[in-house]
Length: 252
Image 1 (cartoon, rainbow, N blue to C red):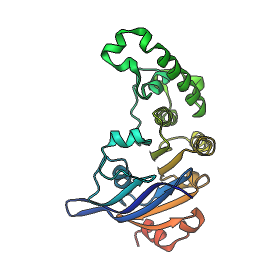
Image 2 (image 1 turned 120 degrees about the vertical axis):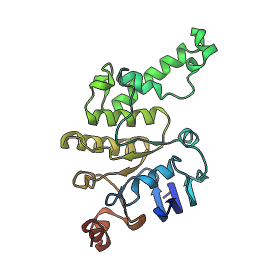
Image 3 (image 1 turned 60 degrees about the vertical axis):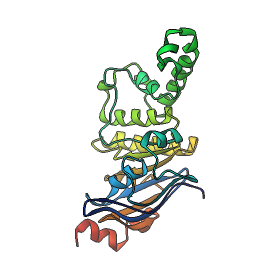
């Protein structure tokens, strides 16, 4: 199967700390891959390095066939790789629909001169609104399109961030604990939506998540890290039974 992301021997240091230590990971296209490990194992640093927020000190990151190792985050985002954060960052006073529309690429109404000429951007604005409604339906937020973002539940905020990534044209989404602090019912709904987006739109998800009792029911592949290294990688039932993972979590 084709790869969405290929991490090749990537290391990231903070002084003498090897936060990511010679890590290699393959993320298949149209998959739900989960990244697990104890706190401090290097998961977030790896995700940030893939997204361009940190520069790799060695190794290479490929997005499809393209080397993105040295690209800044905004260039990586434009290529179709988006990253969400554990704490959502939304425009709190704007509506859900407006938050989704903000992510529309190359809107002519955002330019100073063209914004003056209404006819130059109205059709694009209408198209963006139609796409936003479709996206909100996909992520389960259609019924609250006119509500301010600040009124959403924590789980709905995370769904809106996923929706904004889709509005920006993302084909691969890096998710940082999408169900952290979310009630179990909505947590299952979020992962059900991710499965649908993978199946129906071919979106690839690479996910950091601690709530394995919920997440493992939905994902295809598990990558486990400890002490900056990948210690296990494969099908959920195989990785979760790996003695190295058990030892890492128990601190043995």
